[in-house]
Image (cartoon, rainbow, N blue to C red; front, side):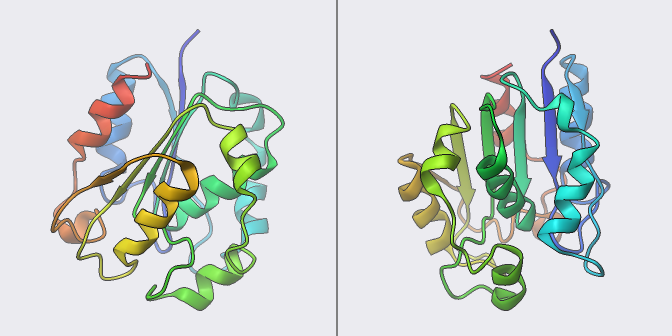
Length: 186
């Protein structure tokens, strides 16, 4: 069975932004089914609206699925894991806002995530493996978010120095470390 991979963009993002198209192409070359849903953002952005989008893909999320989230897409990934009935294969979290200030759009992210109250036990039970990436000069989400997320998930942080928000703005139209780590699970 082919591996399903979902890639979730963040606020004001799209399936065509940052390193997402590159990663999609590389994973398709590895015979994966790759889905990059388009979420409403910034207009109409809410957890409920994003969950409604993912409903169309519900049957494709299973124990062989890999999830990848960037920025608010990572926050959505965590919220999705809270709701799944069965675990996924692996989750990759990039530049994660989980409530540690400073976060540039703290109020907006807090609304999206119900005040950053997350069910960590449920999240951990719904993914067999986690990998967290963060940088020390992210202008939107401070490094302590990545550190705290790694601590909550009981894993080591994959620290990328001077990588900004790990997006196109900071030079990431490709993300080779992420691809290499995903390949370990294919």
